[in-house]
Amino acid sequence: MEQKRIVAIRTGKTIYRENDKLYKVFEENYKKSDILNEALNHARVEESGLVVPTLHEVGNIDGKWTLVYQYIKGKTLEQLMAKNPDKIDEYLELFVNLQMEIHSKSIPHLNKIKDKIKDRISQCEQLDATTRYELHTHLASMPNHDHVIHGDFNPSNIIISDDDGKVYVVDWAHASQGNSSYDAAMTYLLLQLSGNLTLADKYLDLYCKKTNTLKNYVQSWIPIVAAAKLVTCRKEEAEFLKHALNIYDHE
Image 1: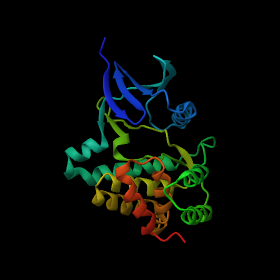
Image 2: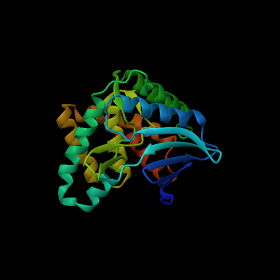
Image 3: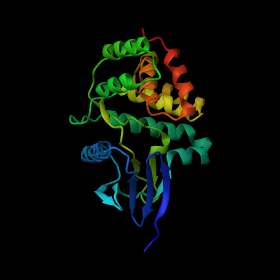
C-alpha cells in the first residue's frame, strides 16, 4: 500500500494523499459547521454536472474531522502557466471559459453571497463604523443574481488530469450563489495578491470581453470583495486589501 504523502498544509488543515484518495484533515478547533458546509457545497456542485473530484466520505480520523475526495493526478493551471509562459493566452482562455461555465449554473440551496458578505463586513474590526456603513449600503445597491460562485477561483484550484486531460475545479469551501461579477472581482483580486498584476489585468479584460460585462462594473465590486477578504486574510495581505477598498469609489 502506498504511504501517506502530504500534499499541502493550510491554516487549520492538512491535506494528504493515500493511493487514489485525497484526505483533508481539519484541526480540532475548526468549526464543525464550516466543515460540513464545505462537504455539502461540494456535493451540490458535484450534482450540478460540473467536473469536480468525487466526494467519497465525511468522517472522523484520529479524532479529527476529515473530508475524503477522489485524488486527481495532474498539474494545476498555476503550475502549467509557470512552466509554459508562451501558452499563457491559451491557458487564460481555458480559465475564463471554465469560470463562465460555473456561472452558467444555478444551485438554489447554496448560501447567498450577499448574506455572507454582509456578515463579513459586520465582523471586520479593521474597518471603522463609517466605512462598514458605506460598504453595507453599496452591497445592498448591487443587483441580485443566482449564478453559482466559486469564491476562490484561481489557477491553483484548477487541475488538468494526466490520465484523460479532463479539467477539474477543486476547493468549493467558499461556494455560494449570487452575482457572477463578484466572483470575477474576487479572481482579479486573488491574481493581484499572488503578485501577477499583468495576468490579473489580462484576465479582467478577457472576462469582460467574453461575458460582455462593463469593466468598471466588475471593478465596482472590488471594495466589497476586499472587505470580505480582510476578515480571513494573512497579515501580509491586509495593507493591500485596505488600499483596494479605496481604489474604486463605493459611494
